[in-house]
Length: 192
Image (cartoon, rainbow, N blue to C red; front, side, top):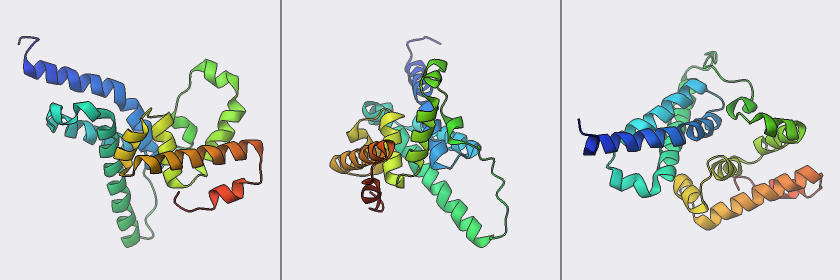
């Protein structure tokens, strides 16, 4: 087959997207699914299967937010399905292969680990204590490297709301890092 054929170009585009986004999408989805690695892998795989089925011109100019949104929607669907199943089977044991620590989902370079591991550990704990939407926008911004506009598209929010969530989350983390009593006021707003 000629390497300049349309099918080869499409395959190359999907392969490049897979190489670039698979890791960040897996980390993002893994956190949404509370460490369920197999479920996160399934969700990310589904997103790329859906990408293959899409017209390239329809998603190419906003590929990252499109992939994150597909993963988010699939993960939320999976969570809702599990909740329905757990409601109908209240005594069923949880055997879905969860990872033990949130640190397992992000592999730092050795130089980064050596700098301030106790600060990183404290910060990750503080991020985990933020309201869900704040955690999610911070992950999309700093792990997914998405713009405010892209995050708004993924989470179906306005750009200004994304900005408020990020600002509030960072302010809360800053207050907690310095041990300020203002923390209680910042975190008392549910869902922000």
